[in-house]
Amino acid sequence: MKIQHYLVRLYPHTWRERYEDELLAMLEQRSLSFTDGVNLLFGALDAQLHPHLGTTGMSLYERIIHMFATLRRSLLTIFCAYIGFILAGWAFQKMTEYDDFVEAARTHSVVGLSFNLVVIGAVVALLAVLAGGLPIAVAVIRSALAQKRRGPLLLLAVPVLAFAVFLGTTFLPEALHRPGNHLSPVWQLFLDRGVFFGTLIAAAVASAGSVCFAVARSEISEKLLRFAVLPSILATISMALVLAATIIWGLGLRDGVPQLFAGNDGLVGSSTTGTWLGIVIAMAIATLLAAVSLIRGLSARSALRNAAA
Amino acid sequence: MEDVEAFAGVHLGPGTLYGAIARLEAQGLIEPLEAYERRRPYRLTDTGIAFLQKQLTGLETFASMGLQRLASR
Image 1 (cartoon, rainbow over the protein chains, first blue to last red):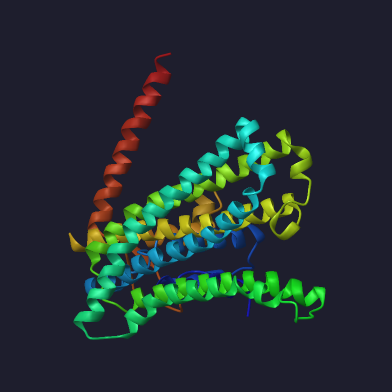
Image 2: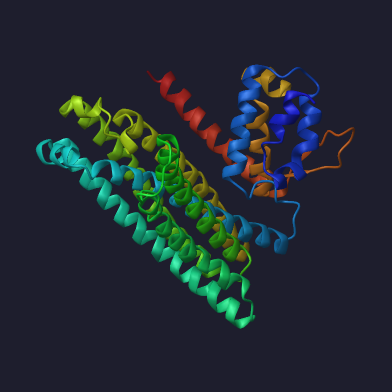
């Protein structure tokens, strides 16, 4: 298969159903240059961001269903991105709770101010996710009770169970350190940290996945989903603010307390610089995913409004 | 693509071209005709003709005003 076939596959399914054949027929007439390949990539990104493109062949009903599903998927992706962001934020909080970092925030204004911005942004993002998510969770519960379906209720219980399992693993190291246990240091380290981080990530994935599964299989009104876009905008802006503040925090620490920045005060005694970079990269990926999904969601919301008019 | 390159001297990438076609079709300014040999021609709709007429008239007014101002210098 030629490269242009792979590039065209990056376009959304609906778009390809409408334009793929004629676009490929045009591309096959001449060899694809590098700039045309890059242009196709940007075209695919544009089509992904504007899901209403390529839906002209659909009936009004099909178009509304398609836009509704796109809006719901976009909101769920923002939620998943937020969960990923929370994990990175939690790592930042764990790293900065040591006395040296607290002292650096107290004595260096850039470090202190940016840290406060991280806290403010995190609180605003949490409130925004709750404002958009709680009415949807209530709608899932109502829908499940009305249809007498246990599935969605059990799925919504998964985050609580996952948190309980995670809390349970925090007692594991204590149990393993009993006098009778003779474990090698490598096993000790694996069980202490590996199990802790593994359970945390597994709990986050299971929680986000089960909530998404429950919402995707419940009857949620269009009005509720359209409302949720507004808190999603606030949540995404807050994530971007926290990301910017985290970057400034690291740069401020590098200039203000270079020995701390270059030391090994990161997570589980790792490099501070490495931990900070890892956190920034994870936050940037989550924010980018949320921003892309937000643009898709806004486009779908606008198309839904136009279709209803 | 070759057509645009020939009369405007600008290379139009395939992603840009199909982004424009999808938008013009979504706005009801163009419509597809029957495909032949996998190639699909498009034509302007009545709305598209009216819109283009308005745009070109605006450009014509703008261009003639610019030329008049240049001539009076």
